[in-house]
Structure formats: C-alpha cells, structure tokens
Amino acid sequence: MQSMNQNTSDQRGDSLLSIVIPAFNEEGNIRELYNELLKVLSSLDLPAEIIFSDDGSNDGTWREIKSLNQQDERVKAVRLSRNFGHQYALLAGLSRAAGDAVVTMDADLQHPPQVIPKLVEEWRRGNKIVHTIRLDPTTVPFFKRVTSKLFYKVFSVLSGVRVRSGMADFRLLDRQVVDSILEFQEGGLFLRGIVQWVGYPSSEIAFESQPRFSGTTKYCFRRMTSFAWNSVTSFSIVPVRIGIFIGLLTSALAFGELIYAVWAKLFTDKVVPGWASAVSIVSLLFGILFILLGLIGEYIGRILIEVKHRPRFLVSEIVGMKDRVH
Image 1 (cartoon, rainbow, N blue to C red):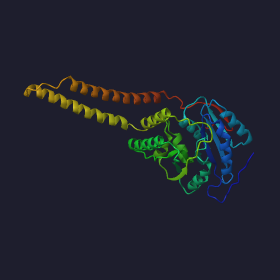
Image 2 (cartoon, rainbow, N blue to C red; image 1 turned 90 degrees about the horizontal axis):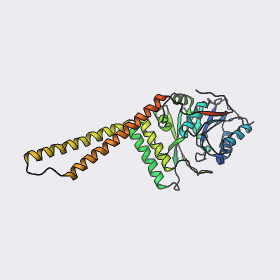
Image 3 (tube, rainbow, N blue to C red; image 1 turned 120 degrees about the horizontal axis):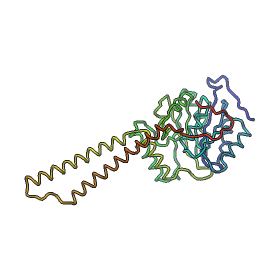
Image 4 (cartoon, one colour; image 1 turned 30 degrees about the vertical axis):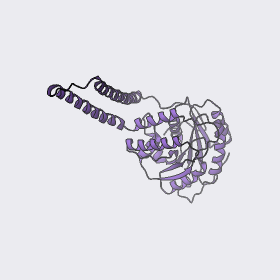
C-alpha cells in the first residue's frame, strides 16, 4: 500500500483530503485518472482518500474501481443501484467522504488533477469553498459556449443566487460546508446553486478545460436542456411569478378589447371587429393559460415527489469503507 507524508508544521497538515469522483460508463478513464491523481497526491502533505461514485455504469467501470482498491486502500467506492444522475452520484460520494477538505471532480480528465494543490492552498488560507472557473478552448462548439453562458445568466437572475459561467462541479469544500450541504433533503438537486446559496468564505481559480481522455460525453442536448430546466425550477419559483405577470398583462389586453367592442357597438356605427381579431385574442389567452397550467403542474409534480420522501439514490455496493452517512 502507498503512504503519504504529513507536514505537522502546517496548521492543517494532519487533515484528511477526500477526492470525490462521480462516474458513469468511464471504464477507459478510471485508471488514467488514478495515475494522474497519484502524481498530484505525492506532492501534497495531506493523507488522502479517493472516492469513486459509480452511477449505475453498465460497462467495466466498477471492475476497474475494485481493481484499484485492491492495489491501494485509499481508493474507495460506492455503487448506485441504477443511473440516478450526475448530481445524485456526486451527493452519494459526498455523503461517504470523511475528509476535512473534499475535492469534487469528473472522471473524464477534463478537470485536470494538477489544479488540486492550488485548491488546497486556497483552503489553507481560510477559504471554505474554492470554486474553479472553466476556460473553454476554442475547439468547444460556439453553440455550447453561448447556451452555457445564457443558462448561468438566466439562472442567476431567476434564483437570486449568482453562479458564474464556467463554474462546474470541480471545486473544494471544507468539512463544514459538506455537512451543511448534506442537510438538504430536496429533490431536483442542483449542487452548483446550493454551494453558492450556503455562503461561507470562498475564492476562485481559473483552469483550462482538457479534452476528454476516452469515451464520449454523457451530456447530449436533451440532457443539458433537462438539467437546465430542473435546475431553474428546483431552485426558484420566479417562473411562476413571471407567468402570473404575463397572465395579468394578457388579461388586461383582453379586457381592453372587450371594452372597445362594447363601446363600438353602443356609440358608433362601426361594426365590432370580426372573427380574426377575436380568434387571435382567444388563441393568445388560451396559449398563455396552458403555459401557466404547465408551470403550475411542474411545481405540483415536484411537491408530489417531495412528499413521497423517496430516497434520492440507492446504494447497491460499497468498497473500502463502512456505510457511513453524515
């Protein structure tokens, strides 16, 4: 087994560093990521644990993780019973992390492990949250860059919680912050928003996103759209309030049309506007009505899911640790 040196002169030299890595069908990346982490951890004066959270992979991801555990006792893992989604896999890993500082990162090596020492340095300076800001290379499609920036701007406006473009789930969290996050019991989890909402002293570090080492991205356009919608609706009721405002506005327009029709009938010789204008108004009102009903239905559905108190994820297997939950 491999050991790590500790610097007792450092004020946090005897602290444990946890690295939490959600993974879904990342068989080709697990070992390469582990090798890169070894290089980084050998330069740190902190004992560490590496926690993989297998989000119901159907390839050899779990086999690779178990093989690494047999080589290095610092490699630990939790396996979910099925694919619950990236945010819940991340939460499952956080719930098992024992570190005084916890780094979360993806398994595809787009989050470079070489940034971890900088995160630890900022933590030692007293920052309990150390964000990273992703700098996308020019090879990233223009559409993806634009929609990403648009999403974060819209989310920040609607939720009142500022999330900068480029903030991903590559960050360091102090133990106190992790414990605060684990108190949240809500569904539709959006950790980027929650990390901003809880507060605490924080800092930011920019990094250049790296190409995926192997495999393909799990975030297609449909998944990104679903993620964006769930993030906004789970974190804010502003969409409903906007819907109310639109409803009031269109109702005022319709009422004005009604007053004009009555006035034209009683006090002028003009014929009341024909079916085209009437149909247009009715169509507009029904369109707005259905949008409002859809928004209300979305939030009612979320309430239904919450009151059922279903577990947010199920664990089928654990390797290298006891089933500890903070």
